[in-house]
Amino acid sequence: MKEFEYLLSSLEKHMPLTAYEKKLIVSKLIYKHISKREILLKPGNVANYTIFVNNGCLRQYFINVEGVEHTTVFGVRGYWLTDINSFLNKCEAKFYIETVEDSEVILLSNDNQAELFELIPKLNIYFRMIYERVVSAKDERILSMLCSRADERFLQFLQCYPNLDSRIPQYLIASYLGVTPEFFSRMKSKMAQDLPKNKK
Image (cartoon, rainbow, N blue to C red):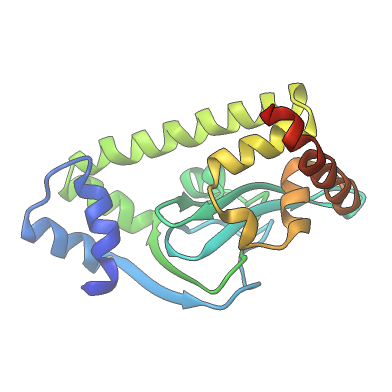
């Protein structure tokens, strides 16, 4: 039960849970410790699980026709991550999901989630909120990629994922921003040079 305490406490921020409900929820979950760079989902497969990040970092990405990786989202402690369309509609996934660091994750299958919705109806409200946040975040991400400069997107990344830039490879941040690693390196250097000017 100890490995599920953080998830349960996260749920309890949104709803009260009885001891029986906690036990029932835990009975439907799978806890895993996964090494970094392990692929949890590939395009063409069905996303049978939604993934709660108990510790570590995951990312969701796709590979374009030129073979370039584009990271769409990072999943850090407390995040739920899945190919949402594949998970909800049981269709083929369009994205990869990969561990960026050694990570602890908790898996909830589509079938077990549906069963929990029947047994604990208030979980419907919680997960609807999660999915609404996912849709909202995707809309914001699209606007950011279309309307913001790369340096502005980097500042948004730092705000959205505090301290993550020091934990993960810089080329992954570049793939999230939609730029090459070389461009990102030059941009960071320029931003560092401009910083004293901005403080004046």
